[in-house]
Amino acid sequence: MSSLQPISLIESLSAQHDRLSAIGQQHLLTFANQLPVSKAGELLDQLAALDVQNLPKLIETYVRNKPASAAGTVIEPLNAYGLDNSVGGMPWNRDQYERRGIELIAAGKVAAFTVAGGQGSRLGFEGPKGCYPAGAVSRQPLFACLADWIKAAQARYAKPGVTIPWFIMTSPLNHDTTERFFIEHNYFGLNKADVTFFRQGVMPSFDMETGKILLAQQHEVALNPDGHGGSLKALHSSGAIAEMRKRGIEQICYCQIDNPLVRVIDPVFLGLHVAAPDSSGEMSSKMVRKASAGEKVGVLRKVDGKTAVVEYSDMPPDLTTAKLASGGLKFDAGSIAVHIISVAFVERLNSSAAGFSLPYHRAEKKVAHIDLHTGHLVEHKHNNAVKLETFVFDALPLCKSSIVMETDRVEEFAPIKNASGPGVSDSPETCTQLQTLRAARWLAAAGITVPHHADGVPNCTLELTPHTAIYAKHLADPASKAILPESIEPGASRVF
Ligand code: UTP
Image (cartoon, rainbow, N blue to C red; front, side, top):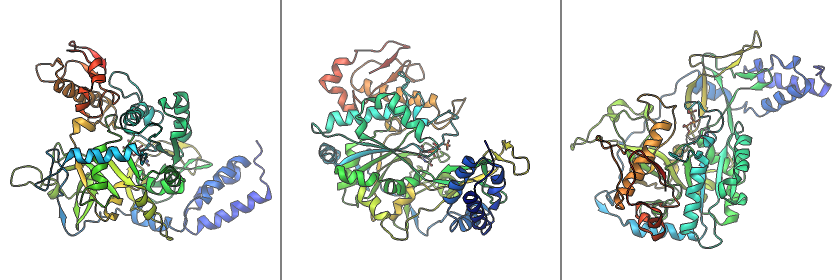
C-alpha cells in the first residue's frame, strides 16, 4: 500500500504533533510519516482519544512517582453480618432478608453484572478469561458457570415472564472475541435479548523510567483496560444504566468473571443490601475471614467511619498482623469482590458536570513495545511499564452507609487467577478442589455418603450446579433429591 499521504492527513498529523509536543509525548508520531494511509488514520484516532489535559498530572503523580496510599486517620475493623447470624453482637434474621431479596428478583428489579474486561495475564490463557474451562467435571467455561447461576435464580425466584438480565463489561481488547464466544455457544441458554455487552475505557501504558507512552505497534498506542473501577463510568457512558432503568432494574449484582462458585444472585445479600437498618442501599460487599495475615486479598475495614477496602499491598504491616485479645486477626475481613450496587448510586456518581473519577492505582507490568530507534517489537523479562487502573471498591467510601456480609470461602470463593503449579493458590487446580469441597460438604449434609482420603480430602471430583442447589438447603427439594444417589463411589467424577 502507498505511504503517500493526502493533505488532510498531513494537516491532522501536524496538529497532533503540536498537541503531543505540549505534553512531551510527540514520540508517538515517530513512524507516522512512513505508515500507509489507513494505518496512519488508525493511529490518529487513538491519539485523538488521549486525554492530554490530564495525562501530565497522572504521569507525574503515578508513573514518575509512587504515591503513598491515602491512609485515613481512624482505621477500625468493621462489623459484618456474620455467618453466625449476628452483627456487632446482635442477631439478624437471615430468612427475613432472604424473603426480601426474593421479592426483588421476582419483581424483575435485579440484574447480574460481570466485569470481564481484564487481561488475565497471570493465568496466561489465550483469550478472554470467561472462555477458560472451569467446571470441576464438566470443564464448561467460566461464562457458562455464571450463566447457570443466572438461569437457576431466574427459574427458582422470578415470576413467569420475568428475567434476570446479564450485563457483561468487556474491554476494547477482548470485546469481539467475547461476543463471538456467546454466539457460538447460543448465549449459554439465555435469551440473547437478556445479555448486554459493553466496553470499558482504556488507559495508555507508560515506560516506567521516562513516563513516555509506549507504542504496541508502529501505528498503535499500547493500551490497557482502565481497571474494574472503570465499570462505574462505563455502565453509564455505554447506556447500560439507561437500559436497566427502562427494564425497571433497581439493583445490580456485581461479580468478577474468575470465580465459578460465586452466587451471582444471592437473595439474602440482596435483602440485607436494601433493607438492613445500617445500609443506605447504595453499594454493599461480601467478605470471607482471611486465611492468614499474609493472604493476598483486599481488606474491608472502616476508615474515618466509612466502609473501605485497602489492597493487601497498601495495608500497613502492623495493621496486617494486628491481633485481637482472643488471638484472632484484628483486620480479617477479606474482600471477595462481590458487591450489590444500586442503579441510583451509579447515576449519582455520574451526575456531576465535572465528571467523576476514582483514584488511580499504579501497577508495574511487563509490556512489549516498539523500540523507537529500530521500529522493532521488544519483549521484557522484567517489569518495564506502569499501567494505571481504578478499582471498583474505591466507590465504597462514597456511599452514605455501606454494609458487609460474611460468607464462607468454601461456599463462594474459588477464583482462578494463576496458572496451576505446586503450592500455587487461586489456580485452576485449587478451583476444582474448592468446587469439590463445597459439593462434598453440601451432599454430606444432605445425607449422601461421600468418600474421603485419610487426610479428610474428598476422594472424588464433584460439581454441584446451581440448578440443583443455590443454597445447601435446596438439596432437600424433591426435584434435587430425585437426582442424588445414596453414595458416591471412590474416585468418581460426578456432576449434579
Ligand atoms: P484481576 O484483578 O484479577 O485482573 O481482575 P485480570 O486482568 O483478570 O488478571 P491479571 O491481573 O492480568 O492476571 C479481577 C476482575 O476484574 C475484571 C477481570 O476481568 C476480573 O473479572 N477486570 C479487571 C476488568 O473487567 N477490567 C479491568 O480493567 C481489570
